[in-house]
Length: 397
Ligand SMILES: *Cc1c(COP(=O)(O)O)cnc(C)c1O
Image 1 (spheres, rainbow, N blue to C red):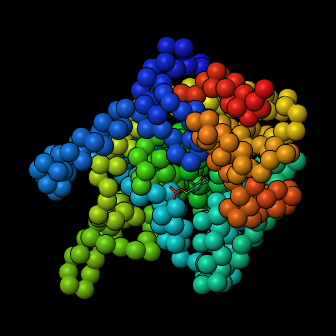
Image 2 (cartoon, rainbow, N blue to C red):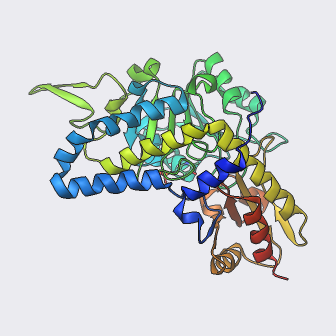
Image 3 (tube, rainbow, N blue to C red):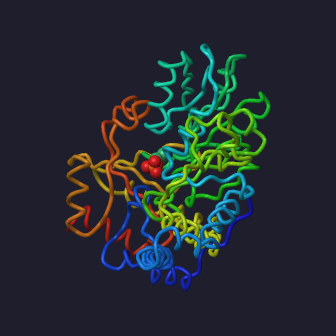
């Protein structure tokens, strides 16, 4: 990858002017929800107004262009075609629609890693109970990313799926999704990537990564509205999957006793939805594309590296991010304070952070002797000045 040019000062000003939420607060909780930009907010409000004025169905008819723009924009973001994109209300359900579509047989095996998202892992456990599958959790290599050698060794003739979380919810790690894709391809395995934190945080290219299915949410690094998300499913694997739920949007009811699945990723959608949100997410993706996801990414990763450096230099503070490549999430602990206390103290100073607990990372934090961490997560509209103010609030003079 060529070195992307970092955003100019003017572009950062532009980003901040477009972000009403960054005026009064320091928002370091972009892994929770990114702050929506003014164009996204406007698009959502406009559609809600239109619904109130002329009726929801009528508003939908009028907004067809913006509605279908969602598919084109998301396809562009991940380098797919629009027919491979499904609108789904959040990342969890998007992942579920892919995962529960796989016709598992008793004895089938699924490979995953320690970064796997809590909701994905409990779904694996449910499938283990229900269909008698086996779960192979691959450990980390010495850098803390998924161990590629161990991963390949874990593959057996019974392995059906590799389920990987690209960037965990609880740390700075960026898993080597592309290298995992090469292994999946070599062994002809289905590959499902949870890109919930990576969408908008780092550039995504499903062709390069080699995943067949990819799930993401709207509200995090893409800065879309809450209650939105999407699923990418490669046209190549559609026939291997049978959606766990079908409705009038996913199918055509062709005769009293027959239905056909839609010919594309729409078979994973359901009919009723947050239309204003879908439009808003399309606008949010366009907004990211207008700056260039690789350039936004370069800036937030640079800011995160600066924050890690500042935290590491403090007395009684420890940084806990793993991995050969680190992203825009920075986790740390103060020796003298519980993470929830740190969060509350920062909140009193109008600084937003969150806390990651072992209950959402049973495969990772406990093994490292950790019960919870303070999680900060930066976006391109954050600044070095905000990092200094944050450090100041953390260690008041
Ligand atoms: C937040 C998160 C999810 C779940 O996203 P929802 O939109 O809340 O369903 C899934 N995976 C990862 C890695 C996440 O951080």
